[in-house]
Length: 191
Length: 211
Image (cartoon, rainbow over all chains, first blue to last red; front, side):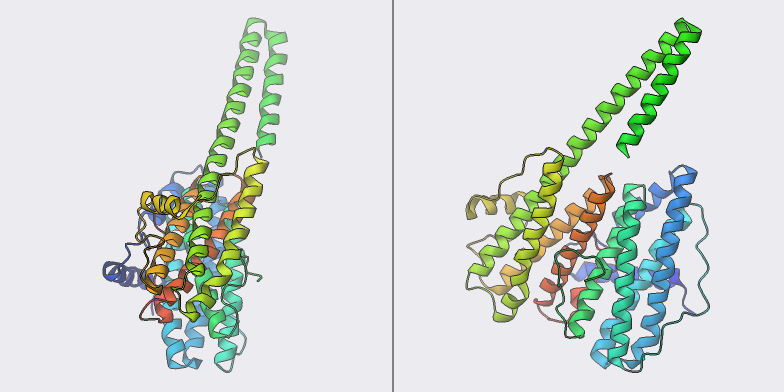
C-alpha cells in the first residue's frame, strides 16, 4: 500500500527531474516556500498552532478524498485522459504529503485516513470527470476559506501553492468536459 | 482586527491611569507606558498600512505590464487562431484584477501606478524583471507565448510573496483568488507550447511562480 508520504516523495523526485530538464527555471515543488512554511508552523505559540493544525487537517481530509476519487476513477477514463489523471493523482498525493509535513512540523499528529470515502457511483468517463471537477472545486473553496485563517505567512503561502495547482487541475478538467477552461478572473470554486 | 487591538491598548492605558491615581508615582509611570504603547501601536499600524500600499502597488504594476503585453501580442499578427482564441479572454481577467487591486489600494489611501507608457517602457520593465523576449521583436507565436508564460510566472511569484506578508484577511482572500487565476493562465499558455500535451500544462504539484 502506498502511503501519502511515500508517494509524495516519489512525486517530488519526478518533479525535480522535470525541473532539471525544463527550459524555464521554475521555483517549485518542495523548494523554499513549503520548507519555510514548516519552520513557521513550528515557531508559533501553541494556541495559534492548534488552530492552524485544525485548518490543515481539514484540507488534508479533502485531499485524501480527492486522491481516492482519482484512484477509483482512472480505470474508467480513456487512455489519454487516464494518463493526465495519473499525473494529477501524483500531484494530489504531493499535496497530502505537504500538508502532513506541515502538521507534523507543528508537533501534531495528522488525522487518520478514513477506511473508505463515499464517492457516488460514476459509471463512465463523463461521470468520473464530473466527480473530479466537484472535488477539485470543493478543495479550492476550502483553501480559499482556510488561507486567510492561517496565521503564519509562510504557511499561508504553502497552502496557496497547493491551491494554484488545484485551480490548474479544474481548468484542465473543464477543458476535458468541453467547458470554458478559465471562465472567470477570480477563482472561487463556484464558477 | 486593528481597531480591536487599539481598544485593548486604550483599555490597558486607562487601567494604567487608574492605577496611577492609587499608586502615585508608580501610576504616572504606568500611564506613561500606556501612552508609549498606544503611540507604538499607531506607528505599527501606519507602517502596516504603508507596507500594504507598497505591496499593492507592486502587484498592480505587474498586472498593468501583463495587460499591456497581452494587448500588444493580441494586436500583432503573431498568434495562431488557436492561441488567439485561448488568450483573448485573459485581457479582461487582468483588467478585473487591476480594478479589484486598485479599489483596495485607494481604500488604503495609496496612489495608483500608471501603466507602461510605451512598448519601450514595457520592454525596459521586462528587462528589469529579467524576463526574456521583447515586444516588437518577437519572431512567432511561440516566442510570444513564452514571454507571456514567463511574465505570468513572475506574477504568480509576486502574489506568493505577498501572501506571506499581508495581514488583511479580505486582501489575502482576493490575492489567493487572483494568484489561482494566473496559475490557470499559466497552464493554458503552457498547453500552447510543444509538445501541446495536457500533462505539460500542470507539470508540478506545488506552484510558487518565479521569484
